[in-house]
Amino acid sequence: MLTPEQLIASQKANMETLYGLTAKAFEGVEKLIDLNVTATKAALNESASHAQAMLSAKDAQELLALQASLFQPLAEKAAAYSRHLYDIASGTGAEFGKAFEAKVAEQQAQFANLVDNAARNAPAGSETAVAVMKSAVAAANNAFESVQKAVKQASEVAEANFNAVTTSATNVAKNASAAAKKSGR
Image 1 (tube, rainbow, N blue to C red):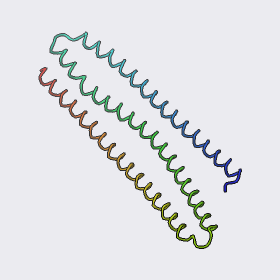
Image 2: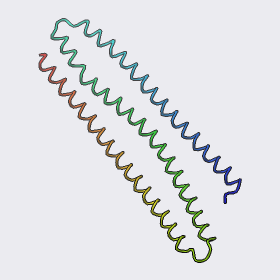
Image 3: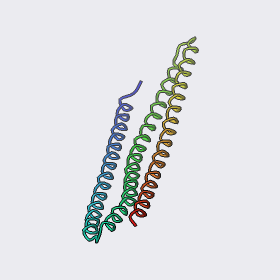
Image 4: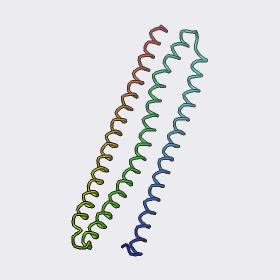
């Protein structure tokens, strides 16, 4: 059984983990706010300069060329914003994942110790029950590790898909901008 000191130590460790995760969550929110403020400032500045350029256009053809020149940088900036947003979210999620994995490993070790203690103190003739319990614990640990691997693989696939979509969207914008420039000439 757990002693009061062990319970207090466990509670203390849990609180430290909670405070650490809370700090990581706030750090992620701060990064998100910084990203949004920076993006908003840049958008306002670019909007003002684009409006000035449009007002100084001499004819419709120049106006169309200005409008066409806006597409590619806009798509690239949207892709960069999405990439930063994804990096913030995945970084924060990775920190939570690490903490979760550490806690699970700690709990698995404690449970394994509990099973070992039970096995040592089990009455004679209960070896089969102890073996079944150890086997069940090992199977549960293996299943958990398999789920962890599957989640990591799914995350890697999702990141690869995100990168492919971002690249594709940027390329489409480049092509559209080039086509608009050609038609405007």
